[in-house]
Image (cartoon, rainbow, N blue to C red):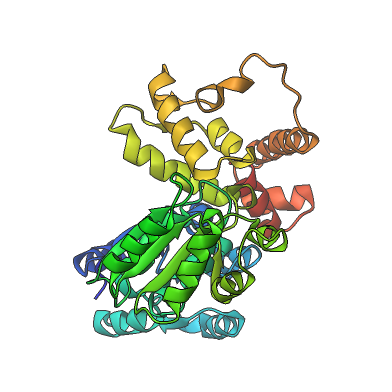
Length: 400
């Protein structure tokens, strides 16, 4: 039932936590077990892949499940939450459902009933299971949802975005998840080759009822555009095309057919640049590191992760792959340091952003107060004159 699913378990009771983890693992799930609110927030907010459900106790040693849920609500839509509650907390659980939680179950419960509830709240699987590819941000999840929907359609499709965002790869995944997957996918790369009408004619003959993927359709010559429009009126294939962000400008300049543009733009997926998705930049870096590292380095330093989030990534994924590969080769220690990823910044005098200076001052002050209170969060929040939830959010932001 849970094969391939990622479940985050937030439970401080060792016996119940171990029992749930064991059973969920036997059912085929990957389980991440966290015993504190502070550990659960980053695991759910920036996971390595999509979290299919969160199983969360109402009462935690450093807060409540309700606080956890509302912290997550402030930045994105949380995964489906199944709350585990005692009889005295049922009213709180009902309030959480009204706020968007999926369901709750009251202790003590039978495992059969628990698994049945969990099955009902799990995030729906994408058809074909292929579309968890773009990232973990709300923008990336929207792209993956659109791709899953496009795989079940037949209309011509345009995938737009800056270079290095994996547009052609997404087009191939859409074909692989579609009903046309038994037929061929034929690719014409107008970015690399000067595609003439002869190449296009051969591709149209070869594709049959499959998918014709044209990479960089904006560079297709006018004669090729004319031939393609004629074929679209009669041929049984599906057209998937990729383009940059200026295809409309080519239409206005007379270099691209307006009717072909409108046909494609009617069903379009736009992939946002990594500069707008810093959490995806870090997520993708970790994925590339895992794929390229081969056990040579132990991971990324915290300062490197901060630098990755701050970088604007003009080359998007292509730049990232090149930087990660170089950093693995160049790093002298076990950890990838900022200078390994961004060697052009080495030796430059550091001018720290004002926000970074403020963060450093806040971090030092919070640490001093926590030391004074012996790590008691509630007392530290009282002394700082902020709520416990606000203190948790600051601690999470500052890496405490």
